Image: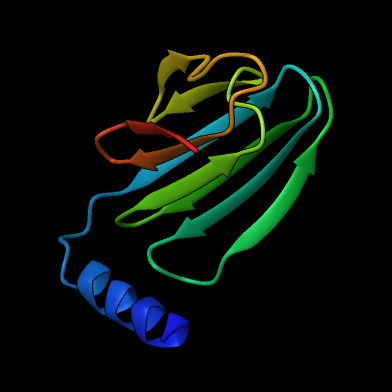
Amino acid sequence: PAAERQSAMAEEITKLPINPQEVIIQALDHVNILFRVDGGPLERIKLKPEEVHAIKGNKKIAIDFSDGGAVNLIHNGKDRGVPGKLGQQLKVVFPGYSKTPM
């Protein structure tokens, strides 16, 4: 069932028009991050304070933060600021910049 959902989600994303996305994550504190680009495989990174990580995609970027208050986000050159509160797990999806506490 999980593999079927993943496949259906990837298929849905391939139907989206190309809309280049770039998200730059600036860590303000230690943070664990899970992200998926264009419906691809789930990737995991850990950032320390002052580390920076860029994620690029053609259609959609979904990011889960262990602490939404420990990062600053820049999306397609626009500073979006700190997306959540300190200690709050948060899911962020681009484009659209939807934020959902977890």
